[in-house]
Image 1 (cartoon, rainbow, N blue to C red):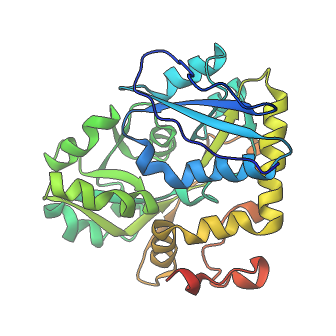
Image 2 (cartoon, helix red, strand yellow):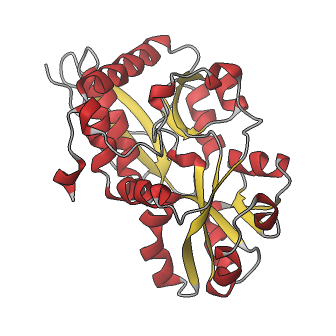
Length: 304
């Protein structure tokens, strides 16, 4: 039976599944911040691929919670209230949960462009070295692993709750707001309407090994195997790459990163285990690679 990906969005405090599962159907539960699901269609699509390609019949149920944080979602998973979460890699999360070793954006999350006040743009666009970039103070989310990576590389980092970051950069509380290139393209139109003085600079880009991963409870080895099987099959059929390359913001990010005028400044990620460093290189994007259809039977121009 073909798997189905149903997204159920309910504004409530506790889970209350009103529709019982169909015979043989299994529910996979997630929690997510209210109003944020729309921005993460690509990532939920990756979970859809995993469930669609695995053996079995699954229904993904997502419940929204006002102001919920990644640590709280992690606690809910440890308590058995949710089954799976996706979040940025960290040593702590890898140790606390079972990690599905497939980087969800093929490492694009580790290519960081910057939103900034438009008055900073001329100076930022000339920062083509690590030393020049370190002259700026960078804002990140309180619980984002990026903060530790940049701090250990000698950057000035200002941590704040996620919903405060954009007004802070608009009011020059810090110089730059770190966003993955594709996230920046996904968000800038909405952000600039609310904060007209905030702009996205496509260069320079700070790059380090990093991505979102799927995580499940250590006791849920079966779901871990299901998700791993599904994503492996999605790669073997070419469906993962079709999903990846059909996303307009990812396509825009890839073109930016391949542009010879984009300065990519690479640093190490000291907060990555050897296990994660050893993930198959084929699952990480090769930024200098320009053709995908030879390997995956997919022609990017079909989506242009």
